[in-house]
Length: 570
Ligand code: GLC
Image (cartoon, rainbow, N blue to C red; front, side):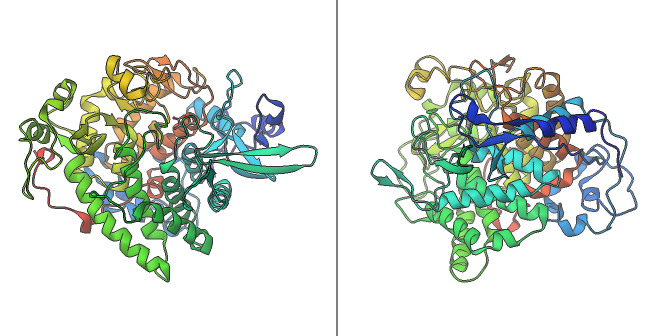
């Protein structure tokens, strides 16, 4: 079939097998035990340069097609077909192996990823956030739901779904326990931010302990966890073709409970989800309270994923109707009010205020003087993006990578908007990608603004950590989004930049500086999602059919009639 890549020798595998690390002996050690397993070689396929997305769909079909220019092909037409197990297995023969010399980092990354695995009663259930021997572990010795997503995708892409299934089932159990903070009981559907496994070597028992925000710094609520859980359940189902997990009554109920939290009637006048600061990947005070783009994109993607998983029977039927209504309203709201390009900025700049009527143009009474200076220079004539937040008299014009890439992957962004986001990335490469991909947000807050907004957070100083720091993990989302938008060369350029440093620097959690040139002030080394993010990016570029597990086709029914900001058609 294919030979073992040079760096993945059997010696390496057996060495790895022998390595058993019982973290109970480590300071603060609370994970049961973390151990490595054998390393599976990556299957390799044509790179995207060589194949169009149409070709990808027919991967597995025996006669190779002549190479085509990928740039002319949009994936949105065929995403549902991607990764369909039935298509993958249609030939009954293994996929062809083409001469491909894997980057030496890949072997190291797999070893490090396997070392990060966490076991519960001998079964793998997740990956630890970071395995940095030089730093106090704090809560980095836990399995974070959001951090596990790239690990899960890497395992799925490598044909190892078991750990993902175990993770989904274990977190589902954790969801069902009663959650209390002081005297307050949290909603039933809340999923944990993270969990740890306590291993008692004497009694030989493992115990799982979850954090729903009660132990987290600042008691931050993980609004994103439930969404990631649903998205991962779909990825597992798409990748394995195994519907029995999602069809289980417990999984159906788990999804309904998560959705109950965000589809409940309240005082809302918008279909977006109102959140507290620090409710997602940015889990410290950073002025993202209100309607942060990351949550809105994940919400949208979770709704679309749930729509494909919830059974249209019993309670499920009503949920499906509510999902449809919300998706419709949410896509309109986001595409209309969060989207910013040159034309729209010019409109806002000329907004009249204090309009009182249904025909108001300036719906949220945004005062043009509140537009920050930097955005006028930053926004190119060609290009656009979803801004950070929109609420009464407040538009947060900052760029947030995760929200924008997840908008592309979920097709919250129309294909024109996806292209415009790619144009922006190309036009503002030094600012958004820099030396080490990729800025979590842009630009940094400093001075008085930093004082007020972050509460003088010493970890979130300008160009560091969540305050416009650079996070290698975002590479996988960038890569997936680029493939979906038909612009894989952008991802390739970013991956090449990552390959010059990431492994040499010890897989840091984040980088600091305007160009992301410095290993972050307090960055952990051997941060698992930096490792897994790289692997996922590489595997996707090599075999773009993996996109099917994390990408969703555009739903033509949801296309709103956009009346303004049409610069992307220029
Ligand atoms: C930091 C990140 C958060 C992540 C956690 C564990 O707190 O902000 O998103 O889940 O570290 O890696």
